[in-house]
Image (cartoon, rainbow, N blue to C red; front, side, top):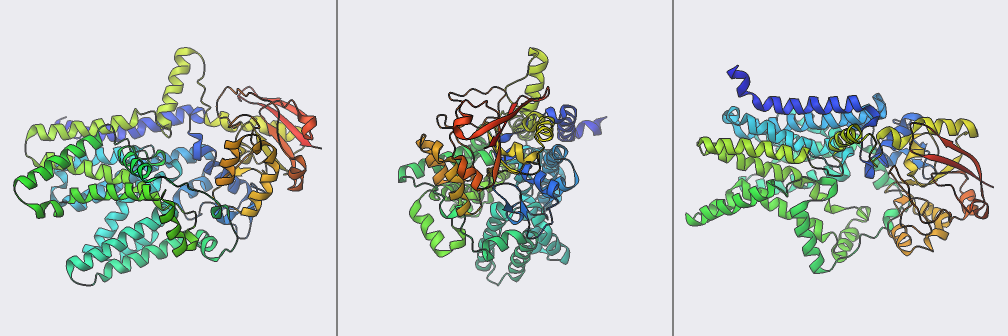
Length: 576
């Protein structure tokens, strides 16, 4: 019994994983899953590749945005992609969530063993709880596994530097299966290059094993994401990246942005460090360096790993801020044109791991104090870190929102405004509509909900959401929505300066796209150029709104459909 009690932290860690799995299994497609950059983006892409059998296709198009090359969609040699090859979409999504946590836990344990050495067993509670906290972070879902695997690549590089072996190089070569080059891989290579130079200076000898590691990882990235490299380096098509405007901030705004991203992070990489981890880390930073100054040990300040971690956090935040300095951005794009439109401020994606690594170091040093209250405080802080993450209602906290929705329905006898996974896509409703109209793959568009809903349901769309497609297509699509853009300046600026969301826009409301149970609009007219729509092959408009000017707009209603399990009333119009 005493031995079981000593493993209390394992009950928390694996109890949480089992609890999360049960909640999502019992809720099924009634689970509340984040829409933004998730259900509206990657999930329908995976579903389209499955429907069209193009996961491994070469020289083929996928039926959205008028027909987009499969090469610009997620790589097939990616663990997350493989889940969608094997499983239906919802189970694949939940498997990805649980695997993310397990990879983070496994990676943190490996790294801790390597760093702590023989004393690792002393730190097991805070190692496991810190690994759970990092794994449970509600970050960008499609890249949850790349986030979770950051400590793994650090471990592999450390092993190669200290004791190189073929197995470590092989593991590093295949590591990109867990990562993603544009968001992580390129930055990891940059960090490794900086380490290469630093080690060369520090050790006063050429670190050949580190250079080889860089080459091996680069080769692995190219092998796993050959489509991406082919598109970027060999493609000559002008894309919307050429006309995207990232904006330009004033010096004061840049400084404020740097401070905000340091203190709060950004929504794709929400580390929840603001509420406890950051205060603990900053207080310890002051204590640590104050002690060095009292002891007149200035060298200690520069040799302490903790200070290096804090410096990296500042560096990542500064890079994020200067991305919005147009002059500097232009220099980067001039030196390397293929990087035009590329967001080099994604260094911020590494900050969640750095925050929790710094936090772990504080906990470890509390353990090292040798005092019982120090160890108890470390354990309590590690549990609190997990609770803050799990109980936060952040954008990507699907577990929280699902539990809240189920409890709300149980207590109130009605559903929340948030749509579940199944309701969002409403497969039965669209199958009914497709059967009634005799749908045979004709190009269509969505109005009043996301084009992703059509894409997921096997309907080819002229509209869609993608950050990399032909500028010429953007210009052709703009002709369709020009009447709406002319009426709403904010929509015009949004589309012209970015354009990743090629949607049908409202002529009055800032957004007609809605993922809520209730749909309230100020205008039921549609403003499109139906001739431009037909010129791109468009035939159907699937609308959540019954249009009042359909005949005037040049489209005719051919059916209205409902389903008891769907929140939508679906109106299907045909261009005439």
